Length: 219
Image 1 (cartoon, one colour):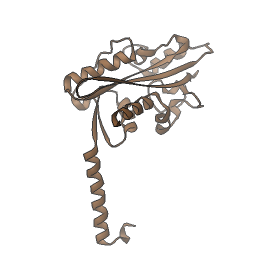
Image 2 (tube, helix red, strand yellow; image 1 turned 90 degrees about the vertical axis):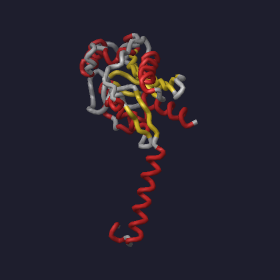
Image 3 (cartoon, rainbow, N blue to C red; image 1 turned 45 degrees about the vertical axis):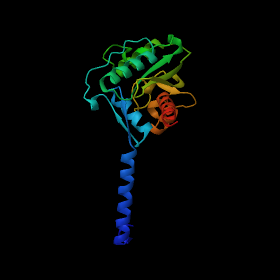
């Protein structure tokens, strides 16, 4: 197709491509996210699209681990957002996510990342959940994400996303991260780890929270 274009047409096509690139660069907005978790950053980038430059802690030269000392997802999300805002003075966001299992009284909940210890090993966390759920018929659970956004003036705004589902008796799938191989979303026969990125983003807790956040930003 390119060879069929005249020199003038090729020039016009090249100029059009460069114009689109310049427009994209001019319209691109930066979002500072208070996390060093590469998996979470990747999901947020795929949800927001190319119009957004998503910047994590390591991109900002911050290597220390932000302590998560609150007892709720909302508290931890705000704590992390305020930590970053105090260091940059710019609009920032943070999120905290928990897997809440009814039969375990809402555990692991706010301790989801450290359920089996401070090493934050997903395999160990899943093993602990599966062992505690052994023999339990009520396997209902939900993932819940809370996003805390601090605007340029430091005012806080919270956004929540929930995905209902159940806990499998054994792992299935190799995609995703965290508890994805043992969580089966409501209405599906596959686990999160068996779904494509687009399928997961369309129904996930984080996807719903991010979309609520985007709706707020564009109003």
